Length: 221
Ligand code: DX5
Image (cartoon, rainbow, N blue to C red; front, side):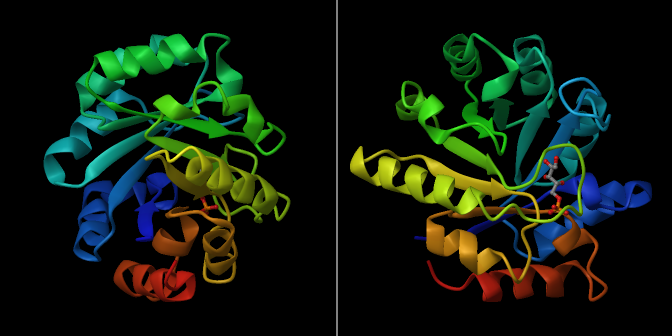
């Protein structure tokens, strides 16, 4: 199973966001994650559609927009129009998750669902078959640079087993505190997409070396 790297621009240098995305692309990452936060679903405010519109022409990489907002249904179309390729919504942010996934697919975009640390993976059992991606939050969402929550490993294992048992073509992505010490743990548990912010953009050795180190530490799946 190929391990993919998705740098989160939340930890990038905002003064030169475009350059950092280009550095990540040159470093061979597989896509870019844009963390959208509304100050209500999570205690922080980050980017809106203008950031996606600005980044869209700068890279050929897929842009996955992690919507830490409520209600997500209000933001699907604006971010799809702004250039998002994948829209990730939180299971906890809407009572109408099935309808939101339909809305994303109707716009021709890939759909992902993110789970906060206290949310059981089994809450996705009815919708898992319709998802291109599940995102297991391995920190409480809102900030970069937090410590990895080790209890997440059981959730990752459960989801990997469920995806394999049902023969689903669904990526299993993890996000939060992913770096050289934790990458191997989450890959061994079954993750195949690693979101990393501070480990990539906060690394003293630069983006390219950081991405290479993350891939090496993740090892073969
Ligand atoms: C947290 C964000 C994460 C965060 C990851 O709410 O969704 O993507 O940027 O940052 P690190 O990799 O530094 O934990």
